[in-house]
Amino acid sequence: MAAAAEPQNPGTDPASTGTGPWRVALVTGSGRQRLGNHIARGLAADGHRVAVHYNRSSEAAMELVAELRAAGGTAEAFQADIRSVANIERLIASVVDKWGRLDVLVNTASVWKPIALESITEQDLQDQFDVDLKGTFFCSQLAGLQMVRQPEGGAIVNFGDWALERPYPQHSAYFAIKGAIPSLTRTLARELAERNPRVRVNCVLPGPVLLPPQTDAEEQAVLLRSTLVRQVDRPDSIVRAVRYLVSDDFITGVCLPVDGGRTIYAAGEDR
Image (cartoon, rainbow, N blue to C red; front, side, top):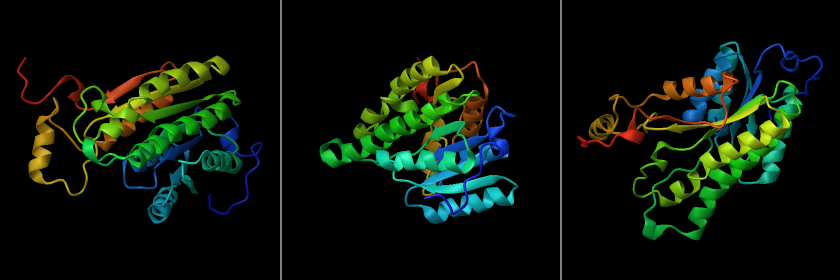
C-alpha cells in the first residue's frame, strides 16, 4: 500500500495545476532492479512525481524512493499484486488520492523465465497471462480512463519484446502472451483518443538492454555479435525511448524496437 500520508488536495497541489505537460508517473515493476527501476529514475530526473510500484520487493522499492528523494525528487512506494484487478483499482486510486492526478503510466511489470515447451503447465501460462497481459490491460484501462478525465490527457507506455519477430526457444508461453501487447497498444491508443485526443498509448520493444548480473564474458560476446551496433546492456537507451514517447504529443499507437538492430539482423547472416 502507499506510504502513510494525508492525500493532498488536487486544487492546491502543483501537480494538478496543469503548468507542465507531465506531472505524476506510475511505473509498474519499478521496485525491482530491472528496467522499471531505471525508467523511474529517468522520469524523476525530468521532474515527475514518481509512484514506485512493487509487489514483493518492498526493500528495493523503499531504497529507490529514498534515492529519488535524496536527489531532490518526489516519490512514494505503492504495493499491489497486479494479477488482481481489485489490487490494480486500489493502486490507481492510491496514486490519484496522493497527488490528485496521473499523467504517465509505464507498464514494465513482467514474468520472464525460461521453460521448455514440454514442461509448460496450465499454471505457467496462467501466471504469464495474469501479469503480462491482464495486468497491463487493467493498469492501462484504469489509468487511461483517469487520464481521459484530465484536460491535459496523459501517456501510457507498454513493454513488449523485440523477439516477437524472431522468437527464441524456451519462452513459448512468454511470447504467446507478449505477442498481444502491440495489438493492445494500438487498440487502447484508438479507444482512449476517442474519449480524449490528448491521451496517447505507445509501446517499447527492448532488446538485450539489461544483462543479468550472472552473464559471463562468453555469453556477453555472443549477445554483442547479435546486434548491428555491437552494444548491449544499455538501459539508458530504454529510458530515453520512454521519455521520448512520453513527451512527444504527436506519437501514438507506435511500437518502437530499441534492440540494436536485432529485429532486422541475425548474427552470421551475410545476405
